[in-house]
View 1 (spheres, rainbow, N blue to C red):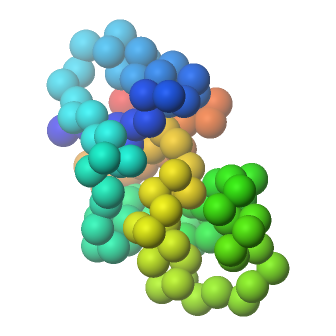
View 2: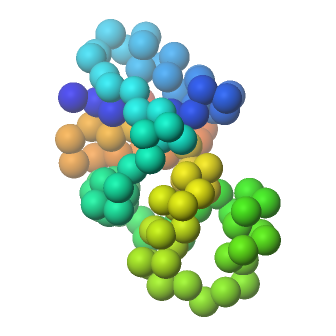
Length: 113
């Protein structure tokens, strides 16, 4: 089943959700700011995306700039930061089996449908 890691306050995430709704396919919505992913879930998503943890971070967020920017962080430390501050996680993320995509732009979601 399709999954979307979604932030309802984000316009791009809402656009991504609309694409899934229009697809007619069943999907699960994970409001990741409320249902914070575990480290294992993040690792699984990263594996599907085929990217490093640093590439999933929203680096323009104030919490990143104030606490992490310019520091040499291990992948584990970056995962810990995303769990502690889930708004650092890029959005939306759509997972379909072992494939996933960051929906920026939202139209990119078509690639995993």
